[in-house]
Image 1 (cartoon, rainbow, N blue to C red):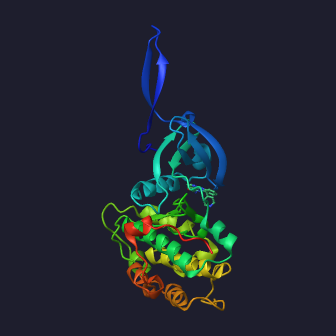
Image 2: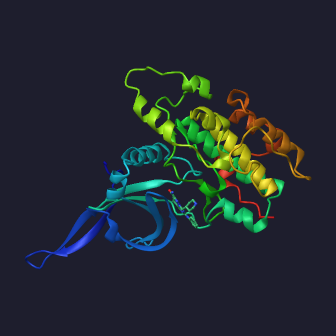
Image 3: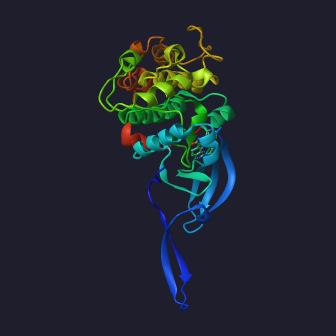
Length: 318
Ligand SMILES: NC(=O)c1nn(CC2CCNCC2)c2c1CCc1cnc(N=C3C=CCC=C3)nc1-2
């Protein structure tokens, strides 16, 4: 497990002649004071942590080596690190600054999102109005577009994994179950994605075993992931449709795994949003709206995307 990125801290020591020497050493666990637990996964715990020298706050994800080895999850750990290493330049993705390790654990030093989960904020207000749903929807979509452009499929997008920073801007997290496409320009749909890809050097093992073992969260998992376990970029857009529905309705469209497409819109659900959701919650991934179409959909009329979107002030929640 090669550490990534090197943050150094300077340490003053007195040498044998009583002279003060300044050493630069790679940052380690002693350079941080660990605070409350922000979340626990089956293989990791995420803590609030403060850099003792700079006083900057981070989220530090700690994984126990013994547990990962015992549960044969080394591949997952490396996938997450490789995924985070690919997603370095976008305001809507939780950033990995660097990693370090000690004899027992691996440490990922990540952006801290002080405003918690989008789900928590939604629960406080019950539902969002169109302006809020459009702002958060646009930031999530902009982040998905960046992920997909870097050949990353998240596979488990849901409001719990959409975090918010101090300015109430979106930061998507938890790439432990992401799928890395070896060719970022890979096709958008499972049939093309499922076609055996015998390019030399393609790591089939990674795809096959991971495709077998992972399925997203029941309420947001796409039909193709349930059917043939092959997630494609359109699978993240199915989850996006579920999230847009939930922001405006206050609950996800499906309770538990979807059988076939039986969901209804509550009275008062905005018509443009209804049309958008209906074109995303489509069983056949090849017929689902693509990101370009979504950005041009009436629901996002007047909404900017790209750099300008991330300079906007988050709307007051109501
Ligand atoms: N799995 C992770 O990588 C991860 N998990 N968490 C906490 C989870 C809590 C349950 N819902 C999903 C997130 C984080 C991260 C990345 C890095 C990260 C950065 N900031 C926060 N901040 C939080 C603040 C209040 C409540 C929850 C999270 N959390 C995380």
